Length: 145
Image (cartoon, rainbow, N blue to C red; front, top):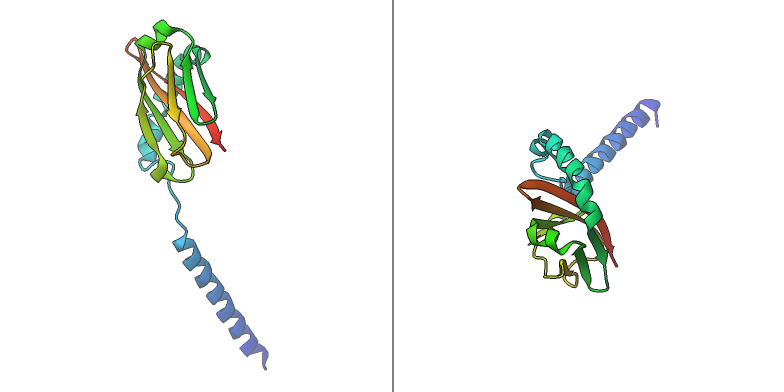
């Protein structure tokens, strides 16, 4: 076999390898963190301002994981009565599992979210809160086993 044929065979093998890699990468499903990520990036300064305001709330709101529940507890029951908003559960690897719960603290300033129907693994919780007409947010990562 001459060296010219070997070069042609090498090019054919290389082209086939590239075609296979393109086909495999096209089949791979990649979810964006958010569909409208560009708009969210523009509004990021508002998030920074909310985060600065949220420092005092983060000290008063505790998120803990129990056997079958996520417990969100507000130490000050008066504060709990004036908080409204929602809890966004974000599944980092599957956007179809994301869901939202309304904030609904009991008289003791506690809210339980049952985890039995949630997939095991890493979840990101974002509490979007409104207190005295100001917006706040708190983010926590939890790992369900």
